[in-house]
Image 1: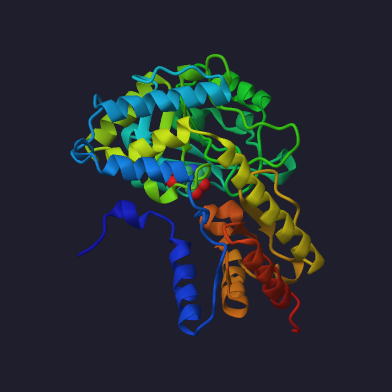
Image 2: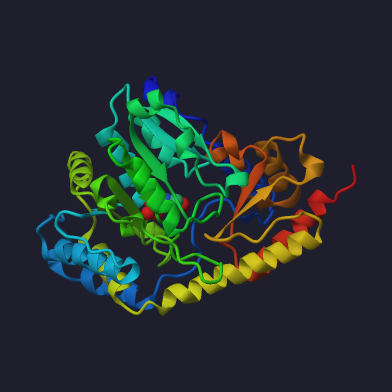
Length: 395
Ligand SMILES: Cc1ncc(COP(=O)(O)O)c(C=O)c1O
């Protein structure tokens, strides 16, 4: 039995190599400190769990969820209201909002719904993996758009050749950026929308980390705040990070009606939506008190500051990230002969600390590793100590 060619075209899933190593260390009795996956460790808001529990007791919650069902209608309205409150973007809940079983699912299905075999998708490198893996699975052609430090990790759109643009159908963007932690301001999105006009390229912006910003006086904007963006842009958002609901699988796409109708149609052949009680929890999260969000951002920030201070003292020079709950770190000079995967393996084997290798996010990630700050302060400090020993061990 052989897998399909489209699966063979996918880059190796580096996280499974690391998972295997982690398990090996655990089997030896080592308490592995896991900074690999961006899997929030904090509990979701109590009132959200309560809403789920109450809803789960109602008989009408348990059949297939339909677009016209009361819960779905209220969920889409809650998303539209949330967007208006947060970004001052007005959305029609019927045509400009599509709920998703997590944004990862929606991003993959967007490529499936849009890409023909000779279409190109312009995807930044590094990127969150489904931005490029979804294109490959859909049979499209990838065009890597490198994000360089000297440009503040913003793309150089004007450098993309006309023949590439001519065959391109889709482009992904993501600010605040995972894994780079870079941010973009409204001026950048204005330039993108101006550039994208009349190009017949769908621009999909992933705004998963809009709440996780650490710079003073900075707010992460929605691309839809730009006039004319709705003509060819959509945006993905998720409850996984801001409300620590990653396991609930709750995301949504908003923006251009036509693009969303394609996404909705693709999904209609693949899934039946979400458990309605889960959607009730989502409504409670979006419509309830929002102080929770500030509280968890402060927690992630404190962990990040502790880590950065400690790791710099241990001799690994890493700057404080601008956003997200990640740290994107250049491998220390002493280890420059090693690939990011080898260095990741070294940290697990010698330090019992698991991180994500930079190349898991594309070729441009070589030479870097990513830390997800999903361990409490005590374990974060323990990790700093262990990593300090590894990077300073005698030759
Ligand atoms: C940039 C980005 N987009 C999307 C996702 C996935 O979100 P969801 O849990 O909604 O599928 C993640 C998760 O880490 C992410 O980092």
